[in-house]
Image (cartoon, rainbow over the protein chains, first blue to last red):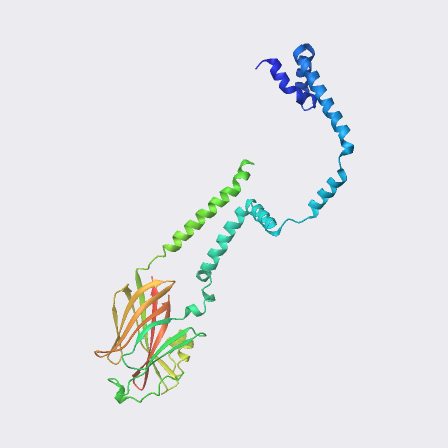
Length: 177
Length: 155
């Protein structure tokens, strides 16, 4: 790419005032001494003038009132709820704060599942023993569970004939609870 | 600034690692090697108003039984391996065989068999919260009844 090609690529931005002072000075110095680039500059300027004239001439015919009304209506109109929800969800998950919410949730879940390790006195019903199976070989049994003292009692009744030592003892009426 | 930009992704990564670690540790709940089984043999009767001072810690539980007198006859503690049997001698020619079954959710599951001489009197499996007890009551003895406090502590 020679110098003229580089300058021609910068011409549009130079004419629009988008180049830095140093760059502008390089382009200006080149254009003033180069017939080819000078012609390109004139072409650009002519094109700008033509487009400008067309726009200025057409502007009065454009219906700006309806444009503004339409814009205003679109600003006030709410999007459908599902679209709005979708946008909110997307924005929420895209936000960096999500990164903090996940560890917070993990901490909460771990706390819920391990609280009784730290606060054993909070355990209530779980502190009671549970009878899973029982066989009293024909004798009657009663199971008592008492919350206040965390007591589970299996009460075994003596059979009618009495066991080995029962005959010589005062018979008990059974559980007193 | 570069570090701050990467912070959310690093926090996310750390979160997932924490979650995985927590899950792994939770799944690998340690199975205790042995269970310390304690049997307290208490004589409950209505013949006096004596309350054995050694039973002070169980007073609330014993009151549920509504007897007037409680006396500790024997207290025995043994370390029992999982699925292993231990036989405890109970006054009146009885025996209590205890077999720890498993440890889950901080509860010890134990199989208990009470025999009177050679005859089985009771077979039961009870899930006891670790380091707590349950009571087996009813066998008659010396004008009262025997109250057996069976506790298990996984170690």
